Each structure stands twice: as structure tokens, then as C-alpha cells.
Length: 115
Image 1: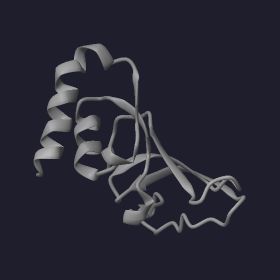
Image 2: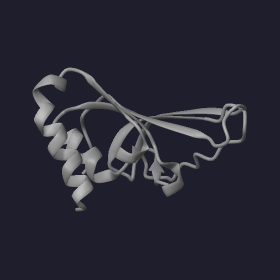
Image 3: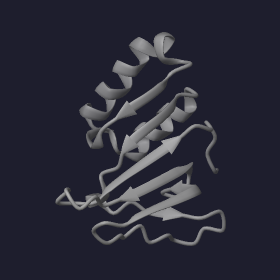
């Protein structure tokens, strides 16, 4: 684990008592699997703008890969999917005509993961 990852987790650890019943909202620099696992283990609900440049694997309940590619002006919603096959949540992909690139948001309300 990189020092950046450790620092992120230690920072959350320091404020865990303040955010336990809140929803943590984050941007792409926090978009990595180990951090998502840490948040789930601590039962933290979160919303994050995914770093889709990393092309994360998103699967359905049966393990089939979901193609999150969208065209400019398009919007797709994926419910009950798994980030990298383990982190369960909902994903919204949209590409507003004003944006140069598409946007993908992962929402994890239920703090459970697939083993």
C-alpha cells in the first residue's frame, strides 16, 4: 500500500467518530479499491467520482462485465453493481455536452461487499 493510501485511511480514522452517520463525498484522487474496502469495513457510506481513466471493472450480480462507455449527451444508471467485483453500489455515468469528458459517480449506501 502506498503512503498516499495509508495517509487517506489514517485521515479518515481521525474523524471516524464525526462521519459515522454521514455520507462521505470524494473526488477521483480517492478512487481506489483498497480505500473503498476500508470505508466499507468501517461502515461508512460514500459517494465518489470515479477515475474512469483507470477503466475499473464493473460487474452485475452474475459477474458479467458492464460496459460503462457513454456518448456525449448520454446518461446511464446502473443499480446493484459491483466495483471490481466486490464493492456493491450504484453507478451513474453521464456526459453533459458542456464537459470535455464523461463523468462516473459511484454511490455506496449499503456497507456490504461480496467475498
